[in-house]
Image (cartoon, rainbow, N blue to C red; front, top):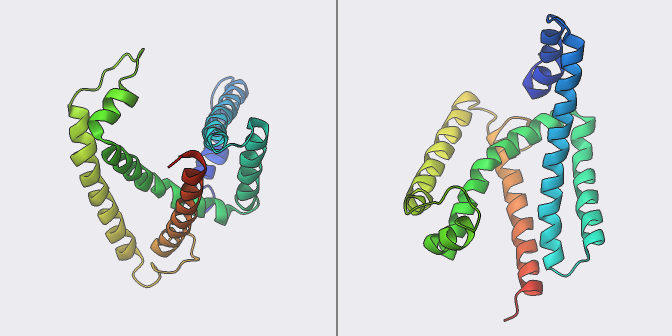
Length: 202
């Protein structure tokens, strides 16, 4: 359908909304400039984080930035040329936030939640100090939420498309999510092991 999805809301319906407002063209320009600034600032933060990881592995900063930026550019090209790919990636990795959340919790648990809280969360200069409630949330609440949300979403996806939910190349399917998550996990585990060997001295 025309105007479906996030791109429909942003680039079709919002301009129409501004078109109905007094001084709509002015406010629409401000809106899209702000949206561009938000996107660029988020992109800078993501590139910086990835760059730091490769710098820790011994790569010089300019080379690390070039490598991360080039990978991001190349991986983003398919989404730039195809709305189906864009929608698929939005679907897969929007849901992937659930997975990343449990990984952060798992890392904190493995590191030691109390140690994680005192050394990495309650750092000097923080306005909010996390108490022992933080430990309970990380150890119990987040894992339970993960299981409930993921279980509900699995059931909802299969029930909504009982015949084709498993198809790995369909834009919106459980199969495409599981396949891409599996590929990403294999790649990230391999990279993590490589970085560990380069940065940690046994």
